Length: 216
Ligand code: NI
Image (cartoon, rainbow, N blue to C red; front, side, top):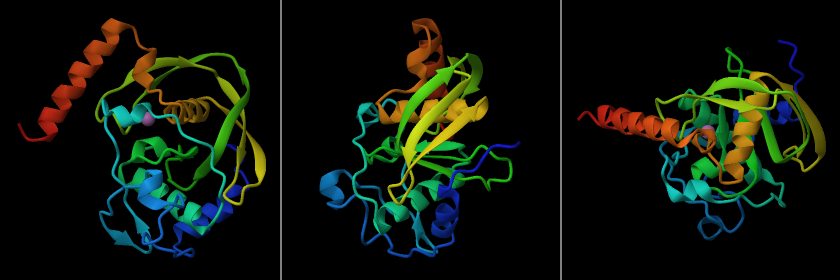
């Protein structure tokens, strides 16, 4: 749909193809578990791993992520793992907060073909314009959806995986995804925008979905 792909795409694709095979023995961020990286490895797939996704109301979802300062092969591996995890869960976006890594990394792919990976590191909104209502879901809230009002267009400044700064403009659903994932990195979730009544109805539905999924 004419969405410009940022320069980061080539390196994401490279990472996705397993070309950067540092493996999960060498997790990012540097410092490993002490720095908050504790995602269990579900399986190995060409050097990538599925990360486990925190679900609401896990208090760790309220953590504010720190800026990334080290751009290395381990960061690329982490980004590849985030894409793998997002695609495996049929999601369109994932923030590092959701896999219990509190660094400013987010990934998005809104394409039907699942071939337009976008990774934004240290993203900051520099301009926003207009408003839209969009029905949002979230991998941390499986099976529930709600209408949220956000800016129609956003312009962000971000780093690519080599630490190079670029600007990225998004509009419509893609702008929703950017704002939703950036909220996660600030410890916010989409239900924070709902009225208390709507939020409690949605959380009841979430509980019901969870019981059904558990086979109760
Ligand atoms: Ni989410």
